[in-house]
Length: 470
Image (cartoon, rainbow, N blue to C red; front, side):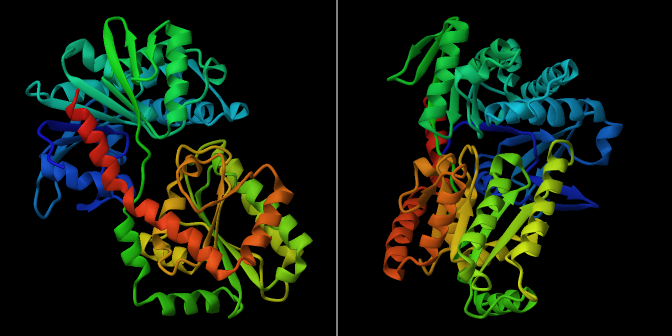
């Protein structure tokens, strides 16, 4: 859609990687969708300048025109000190806000220095943004929980500047959010925005409840607005999606037969065996330990599936700090235990791939999988579910989807599971493997039609259209 305002996009991660003189577009659905928008609007993308340079360039910024072959917009790289990065990103964002919002309260950890540097970094971003504002036609689009109070600092200098934030992860109910000692400052920082986007209506309602109970803000629930200290903030839900056509095209690759034969040969998979698939970051919210418990019980309860069903777990390394490191160790030990317990000769029930696969290979892996298992204990959306559906061009796979993933509230045709019900999940897995082809195709056809009609580009267009009304 045409967008008439100057767009200033702000995120923690930068859209391009700058390594050894090479400039390459970063992987990920969000960047894939937003890069064309930024090229079209000739805007500016403000992000943390990752790399070794931050150690001696903290507090400064660098501008780079992208894409390198035909520059259309600017990436403004903001440099942070090592201490700022540790406290703002690894500390407050990921050791406090992440587990809090995912309601994993035993993982919550907070130090005063985390919050102090979180505020400092949000102000650094705000200053970098304000420097780029040339007229009242500009609009600032903040991304995610790393920048919860940034709009407040922007409005101190440019009170008329339109700002919006999209919160990619869940927003918890007030009884959980009240654990946050800085809850009032977080809420006021969020309400400095003119528009707040969440994945689901339930997250929007949770946020509005928090604003009402904690701040005494007036809520227009039906209109989706919050009135606070003379300012009006719109609250909307925009369920994020994937680039459907791209995944479909990759899954239709002529290399698919060779790819499948290569996997079966190198991984000792039976020629007629079925394949299950999990693709996740090594994060405790993804329920990997629950999934492994399901697999253990499944092969114990239904031993006839040994050597006839193999589960491939792709685990993408994530933050190299606690508690993620210890969680990774637990996952690896559990897989080793299950493989020793249920493995036969050269066959193992779980193939563990700990790497970030090329997206094209991932699309082909999605296509050949008979089952995709998503066992999140809580998830804002979970795009793996939608990637799998987009890649299922033969429409013969089954998506087993945790009812605690945001995607479960959207996608028709998915088989919902409760990852806390281990035996129930094992039984559902057995049923899915024996489901008639006609039933599988009926469900997957519905799911594909939905994701095709609600792709990442529709998500962007819906948000931009709402921004135009600010």
